[in-house]
Image 1 (tube, rainbow, N blue to C red):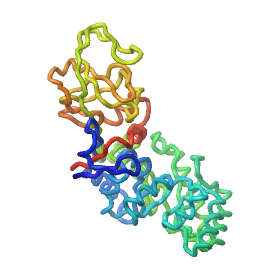
Image 2: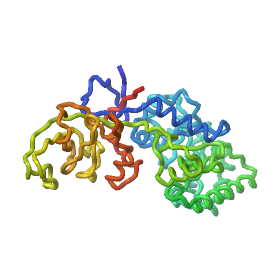
Image 3: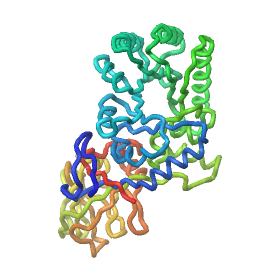
Image 4: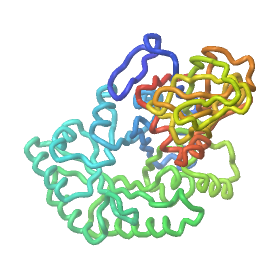
Length: 396
C-alpha cells in the first residue's frame, strides 16, 4: 500500500482516504528533470533541490523520497518548520534553510546541524553565543544583496559581517549566495549580468580578507538553464525540477540558444471525478451569483473540488477540464468545495468519470501554464497553492 503525506506532518494509507481527487507525482519525470539539469551544469557543480512550499505543491515526502538516492548537496527549504517536517521523515537529510530563522529557534537549528542562510548581524551574534555554550559549530551561508532588495547583506556592510564571522570561530562561513531579480522575466538579461558582476565584486572582499568560502551559489532555475557563469559550484533549482519553465521568456531564451523543445517533463497531474450530472434547461443559471446562463438545454457535471483545494476562483467561467479525452468548460463560479462543467458535448460522460484538472487524457492536455493564464498568475502559484490535504500519490 502506498503511504502519502497529508498536510505537513500526517501520514495515512491512500486506500483509507476519499478518492474524489488526488495529485499524481511522476517519479520518472522528476528524475528525468534532475538528471537533465545535471547534464547542463556538469559534474563539478552540486545541486540543492528547492523543496519549500510543500515542494512547490508536489509533496515534501514524495519529492524527497524520489530524490533521496540522487547525489544532493542540500535540500533547500524556506523555514525551520519545513526543515523540521523533513527531518521527522528523513533524520539525516542535509538541509539548507533559505529564509529567516527567529533567534529563539537558532539553538534547535544548530543541534540539528541545519545550514542557515544569514543576513542579519544579530543572527551571527546569537549563533556565536549558542555555539560557544554548546561547544559545537554552526554552518552559515551569507546572503548577499545584489539588486533584488529582498533579504540580503548590502555591499558596504559586508566587511563587518566578514569580520564578525572571523571573530566567531565556531560560526563557520560555509557559503555565500545571491538571488536574481528579473532573470526569468525578460529576454534582456542586462540587469542579471549587473547583479552577477556585483556578486563577483563582493566575493572579492572575502578573498582580500583571506576568508575561504567553500560554496558559492547564485543560480536559480532560469540562471541554471541560461548562464553557465552563474553556476559556480552549486545551483538551487526549483521550478525546472518539477518540469515547468520559469517563464515563457526563459523558454524563449533557451530555445533561441539551444533549440531543444522537450527538455523538461511536467511532474504533477491533478485529477478528480464527476460527483453528479444533471440536465439543466435552456435559460437556467448555474452557480453562485447567476454568472452563467445556459443558452441551450445542457448537461452539467458537478466536480467535488473547489477553491479550498486550490482550484482558483478567478478561473470561473474560463477554465477547462478533461473528461473522456475531451475538454469541458467551467460554468458558473468555482465554489469552496465544488465547481461545475458543461458536458453537453460529451454525451457518454458518466458519474465518477475521471476529471483531469492538470495533465493529459487521450490526445488532450491541460497545462499548469493554461491554469495560470485563466487565473491571471504564474505557474509557481498554481502548483504551490494546491491544498496540502489533497492526497499526493507517486506514480510510474
